[in-house]
Image (cartoon, rainbow, N blue to C red; front, top):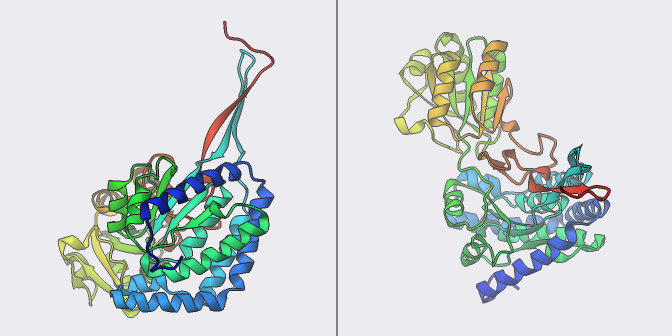
Length: 424
């Protein structure tokens, strides 16, 4: 099937769901070594497909330019040899990570003679809907396979060709390991009706949906999905520079947190400065401006450093995904916490401080999925957390929170044994 082949979307998607459910039954008991072999072989196949990936990506980049994608979206879309190698390394890291399926989470005995174990088990079929990042094809496929789940991947129209070639490498790995092709399926059409069908649950075959993209995509998924969703709307990440911050460290972290890659959800979007240390503002602001970042600050920040643009009210609580950052003076750690509570998205927040008490208060009172101290927010990533890769960041409080790795893609069941126990 090609991207322009006319198809019956309803029939296509229902068949994908049915095949995924059948594959999930096989994967649930697949040996850890078999799943690892599939991922290792997929990584090797991807390395052997670099010219094809680059050619496909060039077509996607042309399509993205025609659509008028922002620079941040284009940065997410582009692949080069280093990024392709990173995708392959990520699959190998997932392959080498501990297999969560069957892990005994807890185990205990009861006076009645029952021996009870709570063990990890796959969720079943996971639908992943994503926009311009073709690497999500590999990350999501690898993590779903590792956790014993079948995956239905619906990439963005702009990454159609790149995702198709990466998916072909995953299929090679599945076949070499003797696992069904339907373990990782890529929706083979750009038709948006496929998204609606997937959100409907495909007749009860889909167990959870994971959206990976901008606010518009995530809001639609959360509104229309008829199955549970793991997601975050925006990465409005704050960096609070305390009076007790090491000044050189604050500069280094601020520049990296904002400018390393501005288009990712872990990029810092708001700087908060302790009003008690106005001398910290100038060096941080100067370094950001020198690196090409526009700093939009309140009146206090403007007074403390030259070159700051006046911030509008809507600049706070905004995900720029660009070379722009908001900045504000606050009254110490308590003021920072109050600001984050009002404007944050529960994604990632960082405090830069040498004061253990301030850090402890920040960690205890800020309710975001990831909290950091003296660390760039760009580390808000499952791969950097040692998960091999991530399928996304969840900011909700039910089931999964923070980076979603293989372990977070499992549920659990109870295994109960006895020597003939009966209940009186």
